[in-house]
Length: 469
Image (cartoon, rainbow, N blue to C red):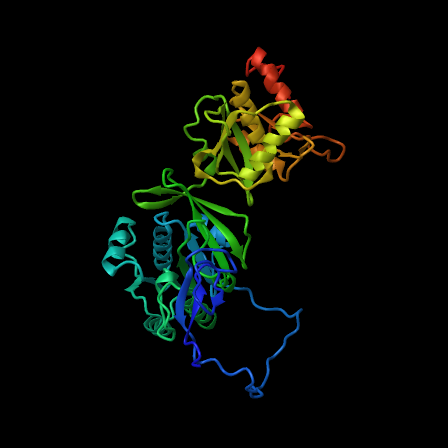
């Protein structure tokens, strides 16, 4: 019986199957198996490998030279990457279609070329003319950037080995293919093989290679996860198309932190840096309204103030809705459960909607108290004071726990004109309890917050008795 000459590979997880099936047994995804030619170059398992010279070990305590960095001049990008691009590294940039990945990278190579660095931009999705038109719109067409449109890996590597630029942009990795494999471009085998060759080129030549990756409908970078393991940094470009704000996050970074964000604003001439994100996210907030609370958050080393909006309304149908934009839906369910069981509020037969204004996504537990304050404000139909910021973590018992770096949060709020804050009591230092830049309304449990909101219903939202520090 002849041996099979092809296998079926899942395009979601990379699992190899001997025959086709409608559903992958490993990841459970449907219609993801694609037939690929079986490699004939694999050596037999029983064949003994020839003895080589082995490998050389070094002492763990040895001193190595510092890794040189290429400062792009775009402050938000340098912040996320940890101080600039690293020579000999490989980065993977992902994001939704049309979010601005190519725009950001084209502006980056333009800024590097202006500094005298040799850069190459290789597009597999657009023609040379399309990229040139975008460069003119971004005002970088006069910079000495090497531009090419190619999808075959062989000519790309030959050209890069001949020129050895400082920075290489590959847009995108899913469009590349190598004739060493019989699979179609974009399949797991092709993406893995092309990414591996480009990473190897970066390590050998010292060039910084930036790969652009497509994302799936779930927001994950398409293709095998092994690509994310091979590269040195994985950056995600996030944002809502309805908003002009764009957020650059590092999900993996071998040369810097992973909790920093870069904030950009999309304009006609490209992406502009946002030096004060708090002022931008709160721009146009106006007077305080019901169901609105300002959260003093922290993104890496940068304090960011954002508005959290909540709406509690009677349910039109039998099952109440819980809709969340910009926050974790599971965390919202926990906050609602604590409000019901510990504070006596009832959300039976009521829809609850939660939104983080500006298109920002918050992953910090310190937003629990601000979310609870916005929900209570909407439930009692009373607005919170307009000069108030809220932050704190809520436990299942209803206690409010202090969060890290409250000093930076309070200073950022004071700089933007806020006059008071609600949070957990701060720990005493040197026998003193310093409230920092703002008067702090200390609460120990979520029930205290709800009582203040209830009292303000009768006395008014600006009552000194309800919101006294």
